Amino acid sequence: QVQLVESGGGLAQAGGSLRLSCAASGRIFSINSMGWYRQAPGKQRELVASITSGGSTNYADSVKGRFTISRDNAKNTVWLQMNSLKPEDTAVYYCNAGQLGFGYWGQGTQVTVSS
Image 1 (cartoon, rainbow, N blue to C red):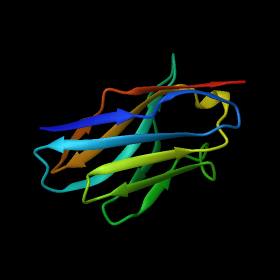
Image 2: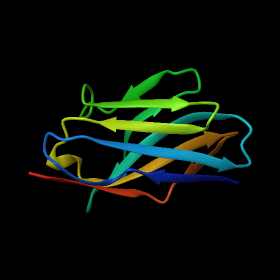
Image 3: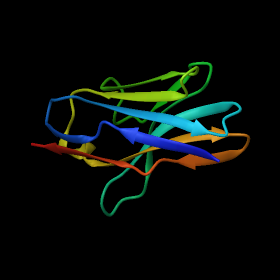
Image 4: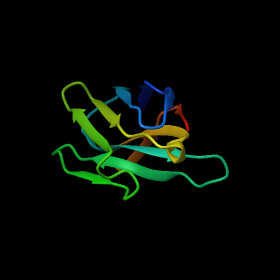
């Protein structure tokens, strides 16, 4: 099993910044993709950004140019730097990691952006 622990959520004003962190622990052999998803009330969970072990990144169109994903493979940690936050970024953000065909999820961290 792989455990993911997120931190860094909270309240920000529109135009502000937050930085999310996610650390993986447990039976780690080779984590391929790590990423962040979010789910707003009444909406489906959606991909925000992902990054492979080789550093290739993918972003949702809604966050391109504002959010940056990065990771440290040695520390099994992924970060999401969120700048120019908008009220529509308000959601629970979940960390995700893929290993050996299995996907793992963190418990989620709330991000609230006030206008």
